[in-house]
Image 1 (cartoon, helix red, strand yellow):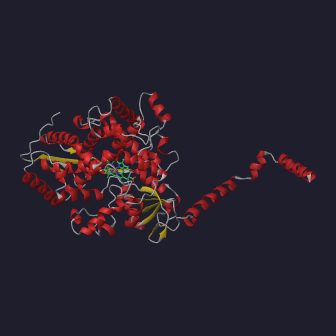
Image 2 (cartoon, protein in one colour):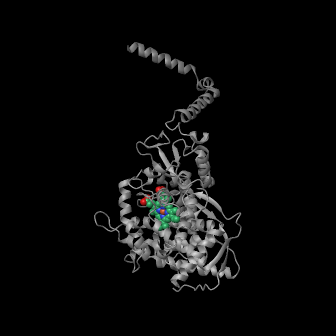
Image 3 (cartoon, rainbow, N blue to C red):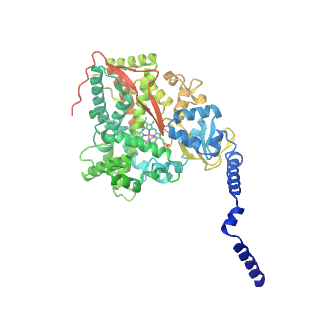
Length: 529
Ligand code: HEM
């Protein structure tokens, strides 16, 4: 046996010696390498097209075998249009990447995001994790940890808590209306994208950091916070499907590199600014006498009854500014755009607001609770945000066991999501005119209204992961619309080109130029304090 082994070894050795490296390379020709690579690639594509567990789901050909169909559209910022088109072309369930499905289906909406259901968020959400920070409510995928985090903050987000902070919202609105009046008196048009954004940032500054951020007063993007967040979202939302995710760009090495040259990578500058603000409030014995959301976060206790740590408080404050400012200002712009593009709606709404002020003899600005007595206002805001919800990417979840759409079985654990904009245009739920702005649809039939409310995805459904900041947004948006139309006549400067939208998770409308005229008899006073 050993004689046989040694003679075989001897044979191989002599073979090896007789072939030099070059001889070997000559035998494995370039053509062979090319053919092998082509064979592997073709097998890979054929597998994804015909043998993959999602091969039975329709979708664009490229999307079935490469993530670049989706990635390219994410990067170019047109997802708010792309996702509507792809569902129009391929139906209610579409394979938008080799291993990702997008769905429009009322039943699935409930199964993924409804009461009593809690499909797990996918790994994609880790792209929102901030290096070195505590686990965040929005990105956390572990259901138990998320439930704990959510319970801890829910008191601060309840409607009764938010109404106690309404005075801060009103302070910002007063500042905005006076600023707008100054421009309208001079005959200037205004970029409502900037003004609504400044309003929403100053409000979250009041709630999460203890003071306005100064965006309204200075009419600037103070410290470039708004730009830093917008740029940060471009990276975080679009790198989610890449290895390393946003941390590829937002990490110690890259941030250190910028610091070396005395600058910052934008987002890290914002992180540092947030940390300084929160640290100074925590050092100031918590609230420093002020009752707001940050005071609640500073008082939070963990399971052992210990006070929440600095990183835990910081992440909650950052959640508010990251998730609560742009979303809300997008909502305000959607409302104003749709109102201005329908003169009949505009007239009816302004009359409703005026009648309320007059019948109540209101001399103070309308409160949130009073706005809820204006059914047309409520319907208009809901309808505008239905058509253009702030978040338009899929809210990705792992498919729970036994999920099927249109008789197509979805393997358990498949990443599957619903984009709020596409679900909100579902004709089976909202009617054949689902793409039209028609606030009246919310009054026509009580049971239909209940169905539409339960499927409306603007705030991410009705379950445990629905938007925790919804109450803040509703307070701001209703007050903003009512008070703007009470004090001004407004319109779009160019109704044919009202704005342009880029979508990076949020569908952000830029350059929304509007004219304003102060209405006779409306005396706006500069806010005191
Ligand atoms: C018009 C305004 C808003 C819209 C349309 C909106 C929309 C949404 C949506 C669709 C989700 C679900 C995301 C997902 O499942 O991946 C969500 C979650 C969330 N929102 Fe909002 N949002 C708005 C305002 C706010 C505000 C004002 C805040 C805070 C001040 C906020 C904080 C959050 C947080 C922390 C989550 C994660 C909740 C969790 O997972 O438990 N949002 N929002």
